[in-house]
Length: 442
Image (cartoon, rainbow, N blue to C red; front, top):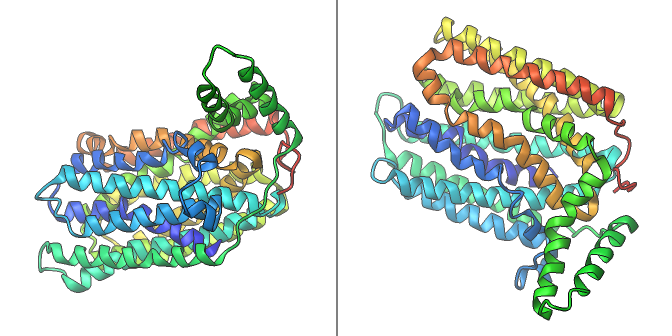
């Protein structure tokens, strides 16, 4: 999971924080950068095509590698293609075509996430998902060191401070990132495909639907076959989730939709914030993208251990409180200004809490899935997790232009209050997470 996490984490900052730094250095307006962050909404809509990843076979790849590995390789190839396209483009000459290439990377990266998440869920029992999540996050955050600090370091080495904006520095940086995606490709070629069998309830549900569709004699044969496939691939995963949780599904989805809202909305504008405070590429690379990610890794390990010791929901509550509280430190830093020591303290607290919360959250989402629909259901959960925060984050540039950084960060901190309330409700009304609701352990 370490290397798969690396492959999943590498593209994110390249269409998010690092890309924002590039665009701001090129002189692109804050509001435009904020709107361009909407390309990351691809991660929030991946539930739409997740049923295809769950059920559709890719020519040659599925036969040679299996369902999960075939989709991973396909998505990784698209990520490499998109990163090379960005590397060879100039945002000042065509911001719309540049945005389309970033969207391709985000779409392919989200598709890779669907396949990797399904592979992780199908490869280990529930009680090990906290450790699996921690290992995945370690690889993911190491990739963020590389795609954040590494990419900025390469660009800064080629175009030192004071030399102004130089496009070729970013070209080399992004080509290097595309090359590093081969780590994921090699990993997929070496790992084994998981062997998962559907549970009895799932088979019975699909059999009832297929029997009902077969009775519709007015439908042409091919149309009936397509209807059966659509039900099994698209409808069944959602019906299964509602059947298992009933009214509690609303509470679960509300919690998922808001849990990361404070961090994600802040994260959209954070790189622009560092530039506006006068931090250099080297300072941001070292403190935010290297030291900060190291703190996230520590938080992930601690989170995985705490989940195994105290269960998921109490650690979710701890993470929710810390995520909201640490956003207030950014409001303080806005008044402090350029201060590397203070930046280090803020990043330490913020990333440590984020790592802890994310490890617990990934374990919780994994426990909610039925392994028969692991790709679709986990994609639904992770999409719901990002959709609202990413949408609100798109307005972050406008918000900062109108109210300033201090007020903006205080607002993001207050967004964590409803999250805490929802977690307390979940602790009261939702069952303890000991095994998957379908009764399986792997």
